[in-house]
Amino acid sequence: MATNEADFDWVADEHSTWQELDNTVRMHGDVLRVAMIDLRTLTGKDRLKVRVIADIEQMLANLGIGHLPSELRGNQDATAVLYKLGSPAAAVIEAVRNGTSSDRLEQALRHLNTAKSTSVQREYSIKKQELAEQLGILDGVAQEIRNIIKS
Image (cartoon, rainbow, N blue to C red; front, top):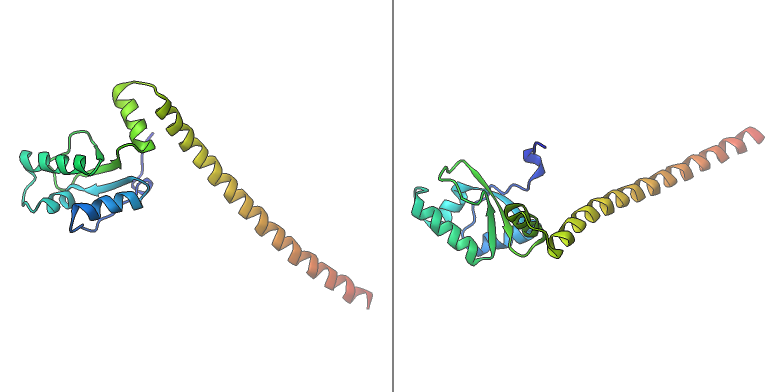
């Protein structure tokens, strides 16, 4: 299944500290796509060389953040998806990487499915309420028309 850029949260703003980046990941549901140039800027280096990439990966690990792809690219125009370790997203990623099944994976998948169905149910409920309000207005108009016809 192809993905669309709109399917991801995208934060193009540079962060001035690693902690700000961590906070932004948390604010975006523990999953965030960032440009490699933004990660490079946090290191204070000018180029994404092997050592700089290793430093980035270590800093992310220190913050409890995993990343996709599993080996970050040295292209500053590339992007990486960051995710908090221990999150439902991390459980799914770990299972795909390792080909394993666990209670944590099952819970994460159930959470993903439930979140979507809950969202759809919420939208349906809102639409139903809006429709009921519109029907109430139409009923009032119909009653006024009946009163006018009677007089």
